Image 1 (spheres, rainbow, N blue to C red):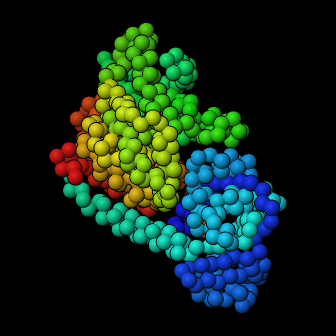
Image 2: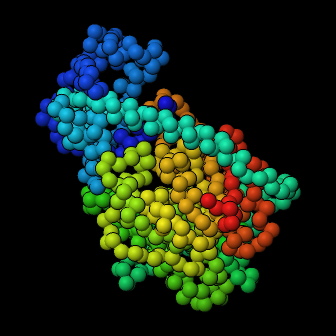
Image 3: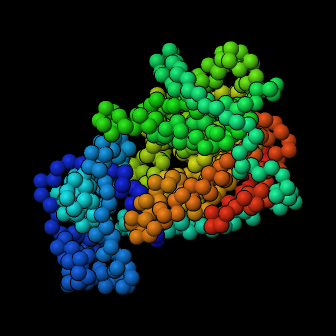
Length: 525
């Protein structure tokens, strides 16, 4: 139930706007033919004083004292939502889809979808001196509210089952991996430590004239050019990410002898997000980014081929390139690995009402704005890809993902409220038929931003340990990527020993356990 509330808050914090002409006085709770109502004043008295009057007794007396205390705290907890920010999001395609889905739960008194009222109440409460609270939301809703308990219970059961099934599956996941080698990892190089090469960073400005697209690229260059060939890794960031989002990973990989390439993706970059919130764009990214992002990587590799002879003495190995992608960047990486858009699957999964338990579906559905035509974005120079919590399951479907034919290392987390492991990560991973590896980290979120939401809702102080979370997640990422890319891109067979469950057990730091499973091409399902 704790993560249920976290998920609900994560969804609510993504939304709404308009000016209410009046305010809710009563809340009507309907379940089939049964119904009960109470005034917002009575609920406020309960929240502030703990008093339960006759109107509320039918509902609240079914809660134990601890649950009543938690409800009082929830009703009064203030969330720092910026009115302008949520207003921008509310008028985006993604925001409207989300609000209309919740409008099936929170309706007007007459039973109409509560979309407009929800949007009005969120922005108005966020703009008020009291800030956004559940109580203030009720006060700002423009009509009396009808809550469909049937929908609430359906949603709750879905979440509860998801959490239970996820916990069960992750706990069993490690058992699928056969005890591999007996390597003494304390006696071989520690991949969590920096490598032997010093690293320099340089920035180049490129322009793709065919697409009229300016692309800024950071290169992390190792002092390794006495070697005959220098392997290359590209990094594709998530939605709204800055180029330096993975600066530590880029430096770490470069210190191990890789030249690391980190480009901006103009249509979904940090600058684009700022412009969106400033009102310069209606959407926070263009649907065409599903095409343009992979083309950005291909264009940059083409430009590097030109620079190879001029600036790198032809020592860059650009025919054996590795790809790392996070979130939207993971989606980009899989496109370059051969995955293709599956519009039939998208049409099915994006039909109303959408499954908002998987928030990433809201972003995947944006691809339906594209022309219905087959687009092959595979770049044959990409020989292996490491993807970290990508959103792909509906976007590519079974047919699209089955086209991937290079080794894939897939990292996921069990506390991901954006791309849930059981709904989004595992089904997509299972659709791959190439050589593949799966690592699931326990108790780590999709992004550390969600930790603040958890703390606010649950009255905890987990954010105080966010630095520990960052360091643990960073060490895992650095070790796993080095081992994978050394084996498949640098083609050093010695690094196969790092692609084993025994290695993930060696670097695991409790309670952030790593569960590792290797699937050979011959035993894929």
